Image (cartoon, rainbow, N blue to C red; front, top):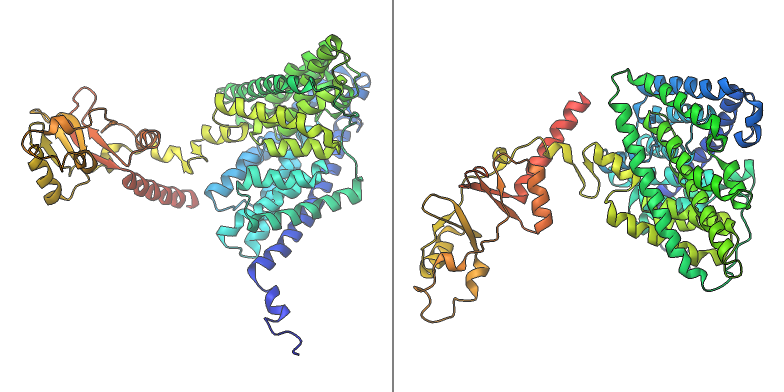
Length: 583
């Protein structure tokens, strides 16, 4: 019997899908060590600014007031210089830039981004910036994945998987949560749960987690409370908690971008704005040291029932303000940890009130704080699966799953109904990039309908009888006939489907006229509308083309605009934009 009747092992290892698995492991190794390096640099930066690496909650009394106010300003100045003169992608929370790179640039991220993000985020957090380190690690890992993909000439269709591998590795190494890392990459970054994406992302996440655990151990960042369901009545309270965490998430998203608008409107150099934001932040955490940096110290206090109601309630809004000042002014860091912080305080306050009123039917406040952490994450990111799994992995308690599901799904459904975009995609929409529609909106917003429409339309008078309408369809081979009055004003549209029902009726060919058959509830655009407005109409109404009128004041028929014409115009504009950008 032959040793192997099929393809040789060496040849099978050369298959692209097998090679991508090896690249995924390489990305996991590099991203894992990137996370280790980032944590050490972050600690060094905090020591550089404050000569102490403890949580600010424990060292606040030893830090002079002037230092609390000045040091975040100095850190902001350094970040402003890095962002404005080295890599603009390092600004903000990083995840939108990764999503944008996948959607519009084939997953290509500049190689310098990883180094810039490590430096900028470490300075921001080390000096007191009220942000998280998971956003930077997603961008750092994604940059590593993109660089590996470019180095090994991975085809564009598989580049987003390489980027997703880096993102998963970043989250997994940061939170010691490999499953959550995988789901974060698939749910938010790649947007695809296919097998071809799943296997490499899992390998990368597991590899990075292994490296992180080797250096920092297998333990969570938080003091997780003992969790158990005290009574079935508690399942009535968790949807309420989902609503509360949803509103907190909405408030965070709104205030963050309002703060960003406020700083954008300032007529001062861009690189100075993070310094101004840092000084304002310093004033905040000189009064509330709990919101310094990532804020794990205060979160542990809430989880272990060591905080009273008023501080818990106040810190929700103080953290929203502190994180909005940090990111809105141009600082660098993630929104994941601030969301966990806000959720922790919200759940702690809710649980404390509930436990005081119903001590025999409810768990301790720390249990609600733990569940609410997932609620705010789900409400900001619209990624409930990731939120559920990251809290489950950190707690290691199965009984938390049902409360987490109720809370996270409630928050996600409510917020996605109220506000279409998540905290990530809102930033892209503000740049004119609609990821859900797969388009850069700003391209279509600068093209007028009159530039793309066709004036070759088939028109018929309102008085045309059915017999002539049928003959016109045969001769003109047109999908629609536009019905107009004596002044060429559009009064309706007839499709072949409109006349099909009366074709077999005897004696109607000369009795029914165009006015009787026409659809009068029309969706139209004018010549001076933009293609984006036209596309929105097509998408909302489910039609394939729109009649074009001269203007709203003079609603005469000028032509027609098809969806295929919009697509052709968009593709041409996109190529032109890329050529100008590359030039």
